[in-house]
Amino acid sequence: MIVDPPTAPKAIEIGHRLARRTGRMHASAIREILKVASRPGMISLAGGLPAPESFPVDIVRQLCDEVLSEDGERVLQYHATEGYGPLREALVPFLAERGVHTSVDDVSIFHGSQNVLDTLAKVLISPGDVIAVESPSYLGALSAFDAYEPNYVMIATDDEGVLPDDLDRVLREHPVKLVYLVPTFQNPTGRTLSPERRVRVAEILREHDALLLEDDPYGMLRYEGTAPLPLHALAPERVVYTSTFSKILAPGLRLGFVVAPRALSRWMVIAKQGVDLHTNTLGQAIAAAYLSGGYLTAHLPKILELYHPRRDAMLQALENHMPDGFVWTRPEGGMFLWVIGPERVDGEALNARCIEHGVAFVPGRFFHADDSGSHTFRLNFTAANRTTMDGAVRLMADAARAMLSASA
Ligand SMILES: Cc1ncc(COP(=O)(O)O)c(C=O)c1O
View 1 (cartoon, helix red, strand yellow):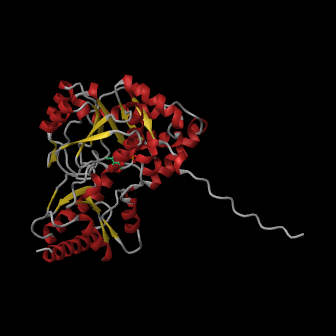
View 2 (cartoon, rainbow, N blue to C red; view 1 turned 90 degrees about the vertical axis):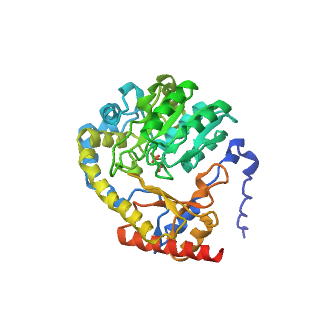
View 3 (tube, rainbow, N blue to C red; view 1 turned 60 degrees about the vertical axis):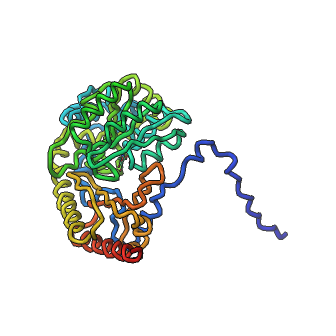
């Protein structure tokens, strides 16, 4: 008997089944650029990844072995949603050194600070609620918030971060549920909110009874200068502070932490319970040992020694090669700097030209919640070494010069 091969069943239609909020989600606009940037032979100034040579692989191997030998049954078990006790305990003095004074009960552990952004928006934001963001802002935060269907209002910035007067205006004119800032070595600009403005921002938050999320993944990557106080230190009752192990240990562990007013962190923990029960315990135990065993103190200088000369090399290359009309930030730390060109140099067109010659960066337009920023771009200075960086910036400069003379 001959049996016909089964015909493939028709693929299920998904479009009409999607939730309304899914319509607000989209693949990151810079994913395509990052895909191109990771092609063999490309020099990428586009990525936001820590340099792989910064990872303390041997330390993680040793600590993994230690925590499994000493406490294997506990670190492989389900655990409390708030986080693994020894990590929460180790974070209290770690945070205090950075000006964030808190107690074990007020620190919770999440899967990266990205998980914190999502969870906070989940508990605060109903469709149409207003989130105030600096312009430009961290793209990943906008993606996390988008799922909760907010409306955005933009706060103007300059070289010292957000303009307090504009924050004041925004809070006066809009019913803002949440203000979101990256005040130190911001992604994408590398800018840091000045100490004077921090004091004023804290006053404004109080004047308007506002709540702010301070996202601080880069504060520990400081190559020079003095760290300003975190906003949390200036208004702890109305600032949610989040940071991460991604840049000081390894992003693959997906470990972030948050300090929030207790009435709010309670809800964040309840929300997290319904999503993933808790953050992975083995990773938390490794991070706890990394902090309490003094490994971070020993390893952080190595990360800074790797990145500091790369930051210098990028600044020098821009100085040497960029044509007149381009200006850029000079961050004292972090991973990015921000270039602003003449309005007739479109960042996307420049990037396309550079990609043809083997260099990629991220056009700044993608970091704006509106359509502005077309002549800006973000450069990562931690991934490439000095010689490579010089060649990449020279190529960008030549491409920019060619565009300028074509449009003259
Ligand atoms: C400003 C900012 N916030 C949050 C994150 C997410 O970090 P994590 O790896 O902790 O989720 C990043 C990642 O690069 C970032 O730049």
